[in-house]
Image (cartoon, rainbow, N blue to C red):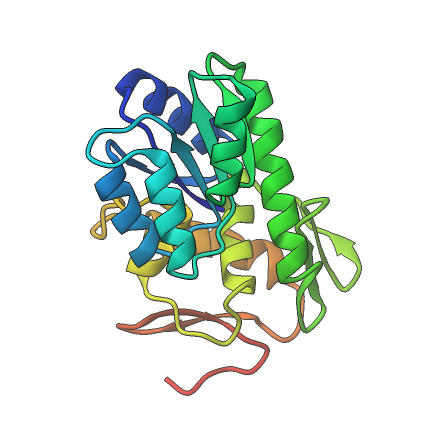
Length: 227
């Protein structure tokens, strides 16, 4: 999943980013409310982790504004203030959950999983093309009923492809969504992971599902596209 963290405390932001990346998520970080609100409006995120006290524009303003712009991405609000009034204000502004600082990363991760699970349920319970299936709830992947074991990043890449079936996805789009907005477009890491995925989900199965469009990107389809 692609997650935006809007947090002005660099140490806290890096702590969250590192932990979420280890769980296989692509994570963008913004240091203030103005920049964070802009990123939330121009990019497609699966979750936004938003600090309440931010420079330039506070978290309540950011949350309220993105909701007014029709953005329904789940928002987990962080704050050092744990009063009932502050929680109510955050929830009334459009936040989906509220976590007080300091917090254990395990609790943050549990709340992230709950919000992403809720988001997945509202999108598609099971992602499927041909005989390939991915269950976002259990994170299980099968093809022709056979279980396929994937690494964390392979799973994230496949999930992104399955959420965009029969669409040509450029290396830039894949890099920004599965890695983060600072992904180096000159890196060959996407090609390496696509190759790994092909070996696991296409080798020994028919039809081939992952296709390369030279100069354009990759497409997940049960019909070979015209190049």
